[in-house]
Image 1 (spheres, rainbow, N blue to C red):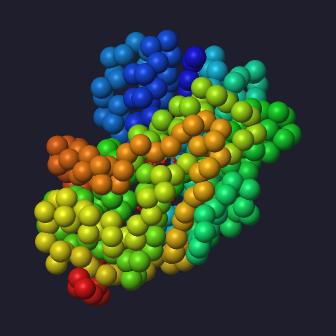
Image 2: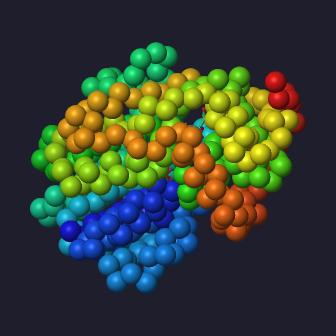
Length: 341
Ligand code: NAD
Ligand code: DAU
């Protein structure tokens, strides 16, 4: 198998690339990544000397870079995307470009030759906020943030290529991931690193929004199973069913880092903040025999240990342009914040 992984220098992509190379001695793996603020070459440094691994810096919206990277590939896993909801609220342009137009460029190059699988990584956010019950794959899509709407556009476009050209597309919709190598703008890594630094933990709104949390390697295992058993035209939900409020996650992080609960601050909410996501994962369980194996307690412990042991990685990120992002996103809101309760 010759596999192209786009966005392989980001959080989930780097965990998946490592698994793909290390578990499959006959596979050749190419990563195409633009290295935006969220992608880092050092996320893959342990693979640099592996002769079965190639890294190409390039944009999925650039047909020339995509043609070079896809040359001879049997399958592609597309992780490349702008991924942070708060940034999409601030400016949606790069989201529409990468998460929709980038997918179109990839699909056009892909369909020039006969290949096995175009695996489009989507998100549970395409279902919108789910007040009760669990989203099933055939539910209506109702994305509510510019990020979620862009991801819905990307996956719908991909599936339209299956319908129209019989391009062998599979779409996955995963719940919130956490684990090693996650850029510290997202809840888990931001709160863990802030707690380790004794900095405030800025909880949005009442802190009672709920997410369905999955350890990143469980997600990667599910994707590996799909690659090995491709059924074109299918869509799979992937989630661990570990549903917690943000306050519960925060309390877990405080306990695991032994940090002061007084660090918690309630700040102004994210506009249009989805209250809850929850996935019905019976399809992937029944069809591929997948289920999450790492409990929330175990995953939290592994993740906190990783951030404790890899301070140089996140300290460097947090001392660079992240500082300006953090100031714009949080300083005024933290100034108006309410203390822990
Ligand atoms: P991330 O932000 O950590 O990484 C994204 C990667 O894509 C980075 O390496 C970045 O450099 C690269 N990239 C961005 N624009 C690009 C472009 N135009 N061309 C080439 N590369 C580009 O993201 P992540 O959290 O690892 O998410 C990966 C995928 O999984 C995304 O498609 C996201 O929508 C989806 N997803 C993420 C989660 C989650 O909880 N993190 C959950 C469900 C789905
Ligand atoms: O559900 C899957 C999605 O999960 C992915 O598609 C996205 O790419 C990924 O970023 C993630 O989106 P969320 O918006 O759910 O993740 P985030 O870590 O930004 O926020 C998780 C919850 O925590 C959400 O309810 C908002 C809240 N939050 C987040 C941050 C960054 C806070 O209360 N304070 C914060 O500072």
